[in-house]
Length: 304
Image (cartoon, rainbow, N blue to C red; front, top):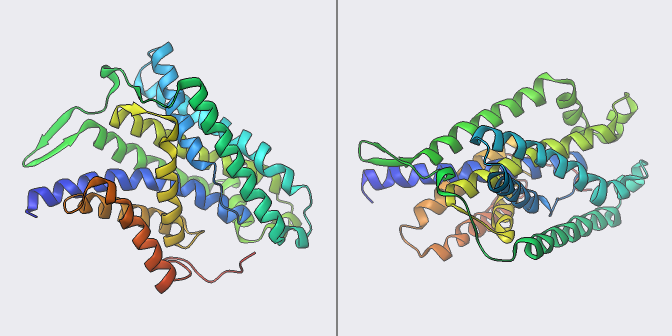
């Protein structure tokens, strides 16, 4: 592989990896707070894409307004998801219930059920066919940088993803709600004992994570030019792999591992057919579970 091709694949891989990172952060935040996997997170990604599609079709607003309204819709989706799929299983706050394996399994199945319902509802409304984006909104304008060809979509994904990651770091480390999220993630009972509203904190976690996932969905839709009801499955799986590789509750680990997956998949397409690139992610997952059971950036924590 010559230098220009390698740089091209690196740029493509970083774009893919940043999208995975935005989705993986939502999974990681929720796992850190509740110690459960949200299997409906991929559908939040798809809902964000369809929200953008509806806005573009009905109102034709400027791109910045589409992203802003999609961000808002993602927050609403996260709030509804938490109220429907997770809140009913948090009625009891005693330690025995929080550590109950049955509660974790029930929550997991609940999120999986919501995922199925949302996906089927999208298929009933929009059919299972690809929904195309108007040509004027596509982020596919080529930009030549020497021997490297980028698109405006690459630059927007880079810039917006990095901006959102920096804002997230500010929220987590410099705001009251961010400190509450970190406290609940560390010890939910201890946080409640010192006066933190754990219910409000969990809601905030879902809202923040879902906002990131929804914006990732519409960015990919505008970049690829097509939106479909099952589009959240693959990014959801890759984000889950990145979360496990990163150590389950490590946000920096999830971001780094998402970038590793994105670049590895991009490079793999030079040697394998596109349909085989998923094996790269699963291969990384198996190696991580075998060699680093706590993840590359994780630490040994009690498995509730």
